[in-house]
Image (tube, rainbow, N blue to C red; front, side):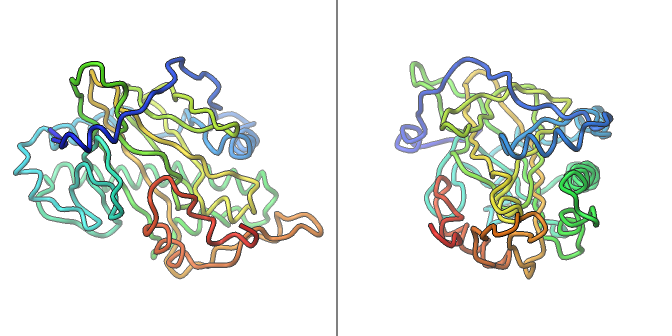
Length: 316
């Protein structure tokens, strides 16, 4: 169980809209219009749900079950896999800049292990990442094809590079029983700095996205599907055509939520700049050129809710 001090709990209280937003775009990868729907969703929301993704539900449940068993361990046992620096087990603290949440987590980097992780969980994580990368690869290549690139691997190659800086995270949002406390922030509002993120959770609500008008809307849970969201790097590569979606997680109290997120990142030395083939004649680049390493270092110095791209905009 995650234990928070009283000041931390107070800082996590928010008020949320209750109605379920039913307008999340759904992309069926088996349909002929999938690539068109992907691009439309990236332009309008920066977020979409993917069905018929090819990863067996039975396998997804196995990883979820193993993760739940880990988070059920006594705190002293879980602490053997931490503290997260940045990889490993962590709780309450998100990053190094004072952001807090009602969450405990495991953060993995490709090719790196750390002490205390049960072998069964570790093996499932490795296989899960392989499976999700295949689904992400399909989505990124469909995206490139719809955008008219001759080479459909213009985005996916960044993720598939052997030096790709991709991450995998398992979040656990425990139930809480505080009376009349409103809604507790599990993970504060932010955008993801990578190219694209792939999220899967158990069938418990909590994820919310921010629309263009600033309204926060709940995402109806679906444990059989993946949810994709555009990251900051993809926003830059498309010169703002695709928008990195701001999102957060609220812990609603009665049941615990488990989510698994694959963050598709480029190699550290990769230059991130708007792709000229996507820009109209006379269109100006909105962003300065930077490497993924430069942006990553800058992003992790900021608080969660800050606009991480502002320092890289040509006219902030």
